[in-house]
Image 1 (cartoon, rainbow, N blue to C red):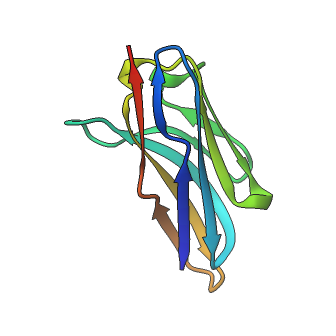
Image 2 (image 1 turned 180 degrees about the vertical axis):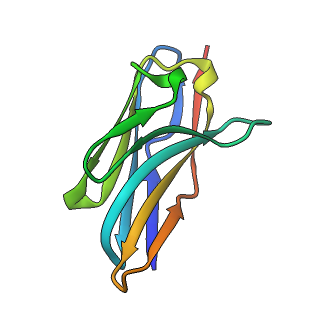
Length: 120
């Protein structure tokens, strides 16, 4: 079993910053890609940012230059630094982690989500 614990969401004014964290624990042999997705009310869940095990990143066009994804492999933790937040960034943010378990199975895990609210 693998558990994901997300933290860092909350209420912030437009122009402010938040940092989300996603800590993975349990039967982990290795972690491949880590990603952050978001879902606003009435909209589909979509990719915000992702990072491979080698550190390559990609971002949604709407967050490029404002958000930064990074990871601490020693801690099995991923982060999303969000700067210059806009009201349209308001959503539930979900962590997604690709894990190779200790019995060598490849499984994708989702966090429960953390709410980010940006006020204008």
